Length: 351
Image 1 (tube, rainbow, N blue to C red):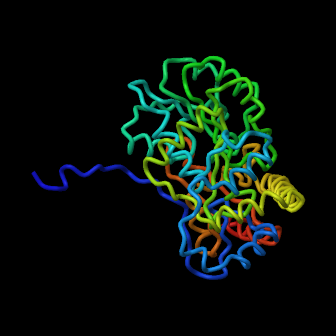
Image 2 (image 1 turned 45 degrees about the vertical axis):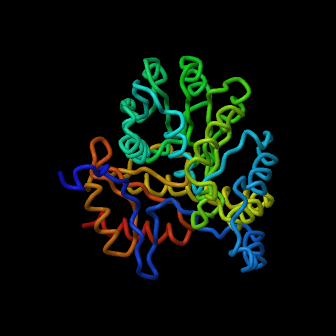
Image 3 (image 1 turned 120 degrees about the horizontal axis):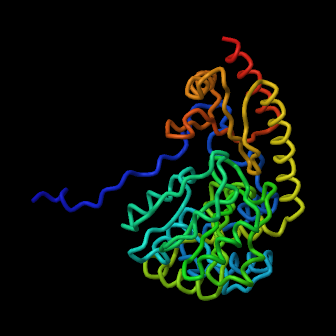
């Protein structure tokens, strides 16, 4: 036997390309095109090097308390991690621990099956409808847990709270995780359902709507029991996941609600204008309620459009996968970036 024979092997998640060239238009990783709140910059400027010598607060109290105040819950209902990916990974490790398969959509965030494979969790992909919608009845079967994003990724489609509640009512013995990474761009959070369902875990991130992808801040809100179990696992793996600078900056971002609202409203307005412009160019779009669009053109394969845009230093996302191989996911940029995209697409489609 070789040492390689005992290595745990998985097919890893493939993140969006991070071009190293300058002066590119980067619309492929759903980053916010606007800077974080001014208070974040002030906090970083005041952050002393002496704090780098010390371990951070393992309980991340300054951030947890700020989140609890912002969302009207107890601190004991809040869990934080290094981006929502870290939070979700911990949730998989904590709650999906049975012989029954967990359920998630077939077209969704592609990290879900990676974590399931990594942690040896049985899983079943539930097909979305022809319109890329979730059918609640499909989740009324034996399972070891349920997870889905709302709005979904990469489709951007938002499901109503009534559908989420239907799934919760049908699965009282399962933890149901709703991944709300894009909820701030026009959706209604399912956080109000926490008072009724103690098996609901809601996960959000600072990477999109709060412009802090580089600091890696994610959080979950749920019942005190769910959060206690999550913390037990976290402190069994690594007690010091959140840096002092990330916690302080996250708290500063939460305090500036006016800036947060203005930034998300700008993105929403640009998104709605982009839907109209792309439809005028012949694209078919889902009614995305996120900070990206999911678009297909009948006259040219998505892969060709993707390559032609990349040759012009405009980066979007394309997956050569069943059902979505002829779609592009396009992050909403600034109005100026979007105008450059429209011009490039008009030129590409003429050929």
